[in-house]
Length: 264
Image (cartoon, rainbow, N blue to C red; front, side):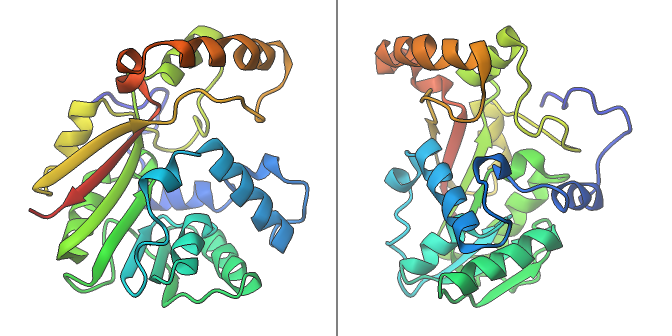
């Protein structure tokens, strides 16, 4: 594995990670509505699934009615709410109390039910073995103090016929290359941990599972996040040029590596 850049103070702890995320909300800049309002949650849902248009194509949020779904690192509950709308019996955990408080508010404002929303560490889950049909962990492992322990715990609480879904950032990707060329930092590059993975490294991390499918995703789309000449060059030139290339050439270089894992 390649160590995170510019982390001079030694290994980060789960407490360090919790402290960081207790003061930040992912994509907060994409809404002008007060934090915790229904409009706030709707804006962030709209932006997330515009940016990640691939996600509902790969994950059938409506396909787990009656199943027990655990999200590790649920944040403000955006994805978990989609599982709940689809009829799943959902549980969400996060290291950050601020995130859990907002997730509860999100569910309340949208009339959704969760079996459990609580502060907990994905590396030491407070659930019995084989408790869940689905374990979902999107965009969490790369920021975790102990990613391997989270994977092991996900495997432990998953039922023998269950499905685990993970996503990490691809170190060998178009966005990583562009970040270096354009001198634009990666999102949450100041986090206590930011670990990028190659496909072989990700597969090695997922070794507790017997059946692993890795799908590179998130290719360039026009961005609302950045401004100025770099955004203009990216949106008007790079996006179209990249997406005109043969898919077979660019497929391995997606920014997101999605993994669909089964125990055997």
